[in-house]
Image (cartoon, rainbow, N blue to C red; front, side, top):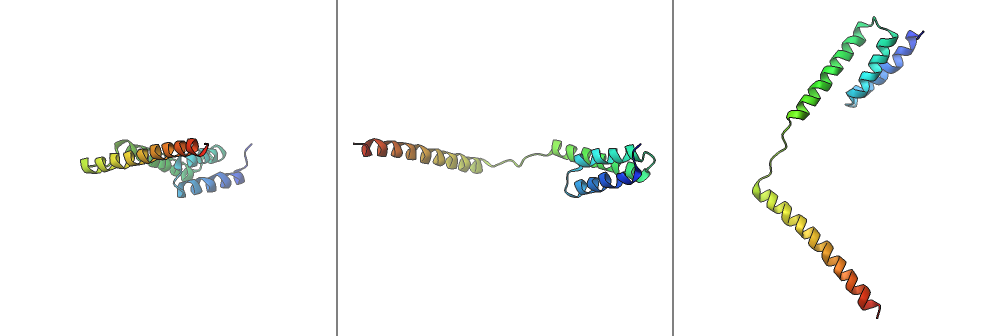
Amino acid sequence: MLKPALAAFPRSRAMCHIQILKPQLAVADLKKVLAIEPQNAQVRKELESTQKLIRKIEFEKAIEVEEETTAVERCLEIIAEGAQRSAAIFYFYFSLCSFFLGSN
């Protein structure tokens, strides 16, 4: 038989998980507490509200729209990426030439 005194540990850990914004981890601990103390209405309420919080977070992630970049911003990004690639290619050829010219 599970000892009711042991229920304090997973419940405390569940509250810590909620405070550090990891409610998914709290659910497992709250279920452990309910397995030890099935009549504990407060823990049952905490479990329900944590599950609601998870559903709300998942819903908000699903409807979240990324900020659209303007055409100018996208062009600047492409230019920056191209400049980085060009610099890498230049460095590669410079290193290659230095290797062959230095080996004479």
